Length: 200
Length: 242
Image (tube, rainbow over all chains, first blue to last red; front, side):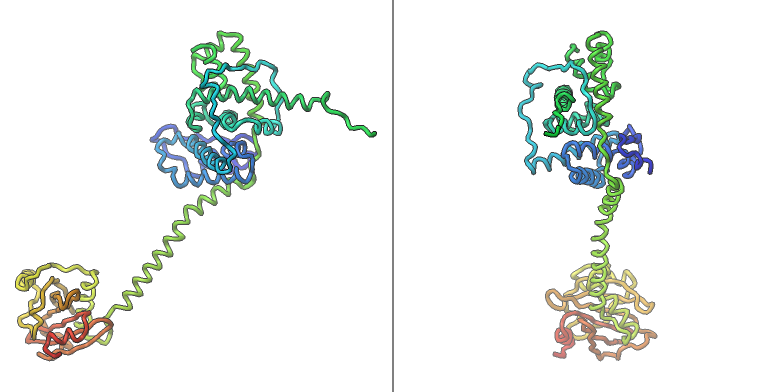
């Protein structure tokens, strides 16, 4: 149980959650251990404020403590938690008017897909955060959930409350956008673009 | 599934290839261009996933568990004091209105205790009837004493119910009357053979305790106590004393 504390910045160790309704439901502590890191990373990527991200995670687990018993399918614990934290974040973002639904969905209007076939850009944690901030929340949310590797694309669709096809196309577009942004950052910080400071 | 659909599905499953359908995987294997694209895409996604790990604040886990415990306990913080306060209020109220005192003869103390419980609904009556004869028959059936004779207008009150009790180990009856609108008077009848501290024959003795007024007397082999929360005048009026 304590080993989960020593993971540091590693991805969370996902403990086996019973897959059938008849299986025993894991304890509250087991559920916290299995998911709090993933939930925090998702919240942090969406709100970009540590205090808010911590509050979102706390709130999510409080919701679970109050309502989790009503979940009949133990295999849905993870989806339930991510859905809850996403809704909590949406509530905050809407109150702060920082997030509005993107009305135009290219994938629903027959827009052609663009495939980025260039070389993979380099990426590190700091650059990635800068790049993610430039993505629209509608695209950032599925992308973050995808990279957390916690949920399948079907579960991501359920979590975000959008059709599976929409999730797939948003993921594809978000990845393309991310690559473009990362490449732009890479180019802007390339040695040839840095003007050396010289004494005049 | 066409190439574009396969590409979308494969792109959504690069980090969880087990989630891709066999059809999409087969297309990636049979289409070199799609396969090459998938390989490059997967490499990029794995690189991003590695870079994705934000540090977790120290103590977050403990904080979650602590808050959950507090949340689980919080109802108890309300419930227990509330229950305790309610119990204390009931106990205090009961003490304030409990009329039985140590100075009373045992038979009277027990009679008054039984009557008080009936008055406040703590103890249920056995039979309810507005017919005095019917009440007496029920008591006879229950082998509980019925009054042979009642003074003044005691027997003229409207009868309500009866109950069999025991007073100092002997069978006794409570007969409930309506002494005035909304007020009851309870008559306890007990066989006084060998009963200590019994009241004098045919001379009602009046006594008050808390909000109760009582009249006690003996008549032959029976001893009576009539108790009511109505005022003393209403009680004495039954005996022609007002």
